[in-house]
Image (cartoon, rainbow, N blue to C red; front, side):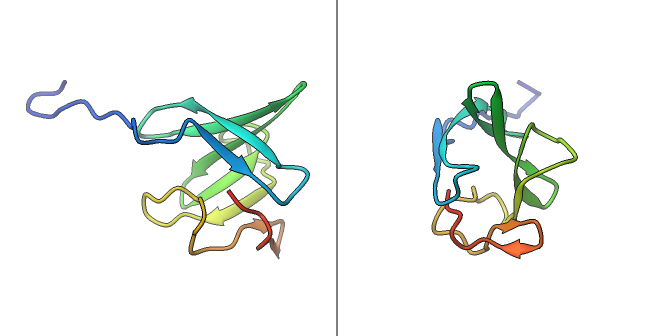
Length: 102
């Protein structure tokens, strides 16, 4: 603990997130990092993984946290997780993907 500041843990983060409505991303994502600064979730299927993570001012689905290539993105809204109901629409490439739900 820093002088006068309690250590913060993000115990309110869900251990799992379920992504639906797009075959490439469908599945259960497990919390892999419970760090208040950079939580992320990963879905592992065989030797392929997809990560759900925050990058600057957006949430992304990509092959790994911070990877330059990502599959889908949605604007971040403060500290909200990108789960339904969420005020912004996911995009896959340059296209809106309103069917993608977390």
